[in-house]
Amino acid sequence: MFAAIASSLFALASSVILLTASAWLITTAATRPPLSELALGITAVRAAGIFRAVFRYLERLSTHKAALDRLNKIRVKLYRAALVTVNIQFGDALHDLTIRAELMKNFIPRVVVPIVGAVVLNIITTAIVFRLIGVIALIIPTALIVTVLIARAIDEKPIDDGDYRAALIDFNDGRDEIFIADAFDGARKILDRQAEKLSTVDNRIVNADSVCSLVNAAVLCIVLYELSARLDTIGLSMHLFVLLINVETTAMIPSAIRLNKKIFPIDETTEPDIEKKPSTEKMIEIKNLKFGYDGRTVLDNFSLDVHRADRIAIVGESGVGKTTLLYLIMGLLTPTEGSIKVGGTIAAATNADYIFSTSIRENFLILHPSITNEKILECLKIAQLDDVDIDAEIGLDGARLSGGQRCRLQTALAVASDAEVLILDEPTAGLDRATADRLVENLLGLSKTLIVITHDPKVAARFNKIFLSTV
Image (cartoon, rainbow, N blue to C red; front, side, top):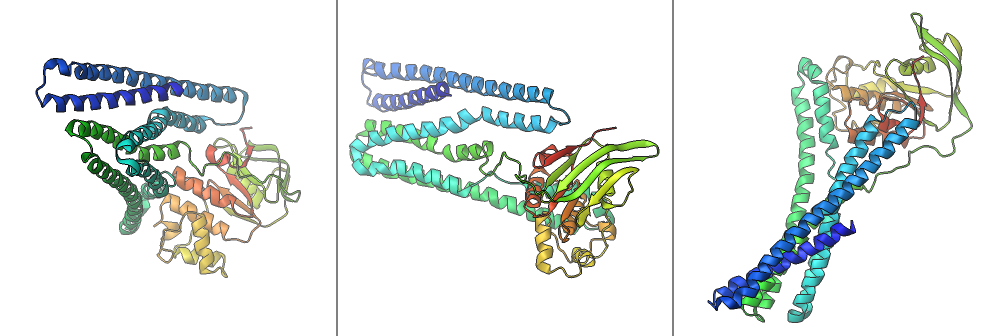
């Protein structure tokens, strides 16, 4: 990293020398002096050009080498972990780490170098100008500070296009139902609303960058005006090029700050949201459970204790009995052998749950007659479904809803229950990454004992995991 920064600073210095020498050469040549008087300027231009090219090459070489070394270390570490760990699917984890490592390749050239270069050049430019115009030169670092503050204030976190992508996924998953129910107008309105929200975020960033550019342009004009009264044409031209390079490097700071937040999200947590000291009170006790279909054993000698406030993820490949275990706990199936004891009330949401054909509000009222409107809206917000009309007809078994919306409604209906244990079957199915993360975050914030059946390794990573495998 230090080699890359040093190479970048030397390249920046070479650019300053190249442009100032060029300015001197052009303005001096206009007076038609003897060629011998221009020899030094010509030599400086050529030498600075060569040095700039060399240092730029060294900068690229060192940054790419450092990034690739880091990427390889991450991949090797992950591969070694996979070799000694069983029952964990590493595909998504490898993809996530690889993407993050690829972003790290841009960290030095697009984050560290622009910021360091802008600060160093800003200090040098201020010092050069200060000897000519005094304290007025301090508006140069002030502009840099204002640029940083605006960039950080307007974009506290990376652009979140999750809602828009979720709306697109919902539209795609439910396109057949939408066609049958002739509900294109409603679906289009949802897409338009999410697109408008995303556009608003983009416009804020564009406007912020424009404000930063105007601030730096105003500073440039003020400094040039003060210099014009103290310098001749040649001196003013040379200072102009130095100031222009300073403005150019300062303009790179907003994008560098945004990329830094994308690589290192502020709100990202590395620790799972798991109860550190679970209660000793057992909500569910399963002992030596055995069950099968048509002569095929699905669960064999399975035991599990679920305590109050536990957060448990049941994971495993398709067909290993995750949903069957849910049905057994709920009493919808009877175990062949073993026992299941339930010490509290249970609410569950599965893909097979029936949805009444009235409205979303009526679905809540049918299951929970005393529920308030505020509670309905709260549960929909937890399930990431607060952007729908709760009084609109949703069709037979929710035919007017997309697959993702239907799944989230089932989750919201289960959350609305006063049950002590909440069991959810694939609650993030059909959701994009951002929406799924927000849903899981909301569920983990509930005081209920939580059991989630999932294929998603990122969801499972937030819970204590119980692995099921084929018998």
